[in-house]
Image (cartoon, rainbow, N blue to C red):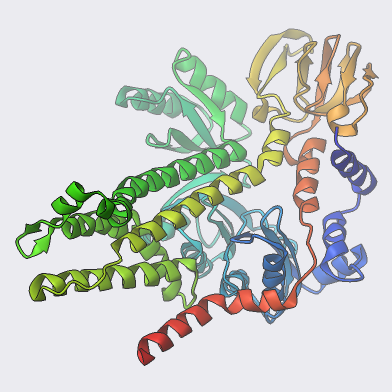
Length: 576
């Protein structure tokens, strides 16, 4: 175990009962003296809110300083801490003076991309009537889309808070169920031109299940028949494209685990249901984004390399150069080939830059996409004009088609590397999540309390009070208490201690640790976010919010870089 992990455990053990631990950790580098837990409590009492923001485009300590300076200058922001390692910013602000979109706008004005993370906004205690729902939102391509969706959601009656994350394509909405329903929220998002679907709800009688084996129309019909006959299900909505089903059930009549079992038994094992894991979904989205970006990069390279060779290499090869200088009507063959290839790169491969630049300008901000569009479009338009001028006058000015194509190719390469880096920043969290086994052995009981057998279940379906069987060499699926058996457990993943710990009846065990040499029966005490491992994951996310020294001049330059470049370009054009 690394020293970093040992320190993280020490922080957990020392501050597990301290509700303001996160504020204290962040405060240690947020200001010179560091705000204390008491100050954090005073901020919450005063109505302060906190938000975690993913910041894209930072490459050095100057970038983190630029983001922090931009946030600190925004009205209503009390403190800001930026992490270069995790590409995140932790912001404490007054909701009466600033909103989440103001924070995003401040970061984007500094020349970076920003998005509010769905689990970030920690506000005042929620109303007892307020519910929280997590929605999958498709079709978002940039921070402008995030702002658009958030703006739409916040204008809906009954919506108290809405936070949308571009990286995970998820949105978290806190709302009053007496004023608006989840279906109306989904409809509002779809009316804005995006795709939307409920992922999970804070209500105990709602859940989103993923399905394995849902391939044909016959499978869909079978699932409908099973769900219709299941007692306690109030309603259900099957999405055959995503292989998901949203269910609303009466917990006094049927439990979530029972619903999963019924689907399995009634379909004779043909359909398998499982609770959606947000970390698995996030990994899938990262992989899809990387695959999409790699496809664009390959296409751009395939079209740009011939253009580059025609400009730099072919003039030195006499017979190829003679062919390229041949005329097809008023145009030279080489010029026509470059025009066709670059047009595909510019408007097909590079379409994403035009869309992103349009949305940024529509929201009154500038980003790198704006510069890419301006530079490549100017080069392309000039080259086309030079081509037409040479065709009709016989005088051929220099053309720069290859410049436009290669700029787009290099930017796509940078985007692809950025996507890969973004995926790797969460590897530590993913590895922690993978410490928990995917399944668990549940001991079934008769009504008289005697054990009737055992059954393998999804670890996400474990409920407090369940008695689980842990075999030698397997991982403990949840935090709990040993009710039977004696064994030694390797807890090095938490404590860093290589020596195994003896566990017997009434001993506590930690989910994710390894059972070594004996069978144990444990009674689950904590599941979900209440486990030690979940707390460590939260602490790792907080601990990575470290900040390098600020360079004020670099911060200032970073904040005005794009506007200055555009201004100089306009001045050059007007005074040429």
